Length: 76
Image (cartoon, rainbow, N blue to C red; front, side, top):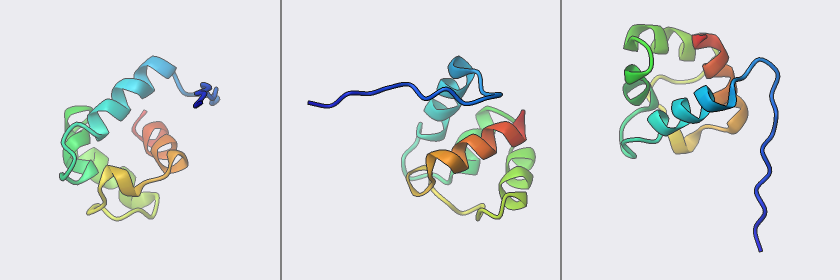
């Protein structure tokens, strides 16, 4: 049996974060900055990812939930 519980994170709108995550995983073999280019301009995504110390050549499945939350907050 698997039980999923929603984790409330301060400053994160659950609906917007879900849309953000769907975009991040939209095309499995693409880099996350390419997928998130549909969310914000690609240049903004690259800047946010690099400032967080994450490679701009990372795929979505390589990131942790905490890293996704950080990227989401950085992109506003």
